[in-house]
Length: 372
Image (cartoon, rainbow, N blue to C red; front, side):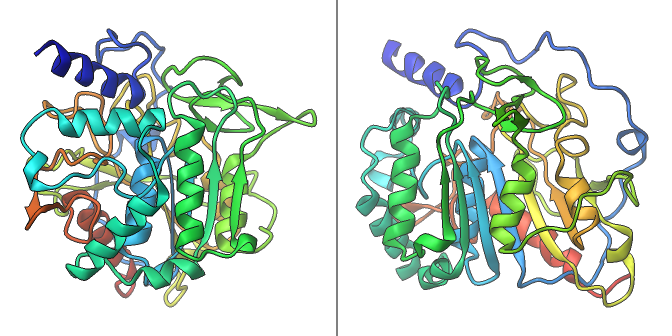
């Protein structure tokens, strides 16, 4: 029992808790109130978005989720930005090991960079494909991948990120499409050029930092988008053409899925026109980084910087949200199988039928329906 408790605490620490014993109630100041957050959530609108031009990114558990989504739905995903995440299925296990502390232990090992041989994860990808649970992994080779590991990150091991890069190489992503940024002394955080903590600060909510590179704060949203889209972006907006829109996630997520009731969406004015066919970028927040946390508020979905670049580059940004629950006390995306679903001898959380992945994919499909 002591070992199980220690493993659980280790997992929560690795997944973004400020300290092992930290409670979910945090002492950070609340984000300023925003009209978009106060507005009544609406049904997710239809914008005729490009369903075959999906890109994803995320921090920590959101980074794991970004890779899971990009592999599971590789046919329609053009790229992924993984910030302090890890390899596909890094904490997955089979039925003989289910029902005990193994999932927690496996997640802890993954974060520490133990037993993270890339070939193992490639074999796992092949097994899921054989079961018909993911798209063909051959599609991954055409994706554009951005990987980031902060040099001061004490939560995710550099070995974990190296294993992620090695797996993408085994999946035949060309060097020209595979970017790895590991020379910035950042902690465990998204990097913004407009807000955040000191660059090398220890992990703390809201997990956003400002890190100078050659005297200029590193703009991670721009770096991610330019790489995964494969083009130089138009200059970012200085004044947004629209505000983030809160939408009702309950239509996409069954009870017990871990989703918040409300997600957020940014749609540039240009993308609201009929037949605009804008691409979609999905941003997965990290643990304890959902908008429902008063110490985070609108910092990720409205202030991180993605919206300013999206506004001038015909890009819809989807910010799905998960929340704190009994089985997920840090509000993390499911990268170790807390949804409990199995098919045969395999967990299904990193596949097309995984509860959270399927829900986000359904949101994207809704955005792709002909404009309302």
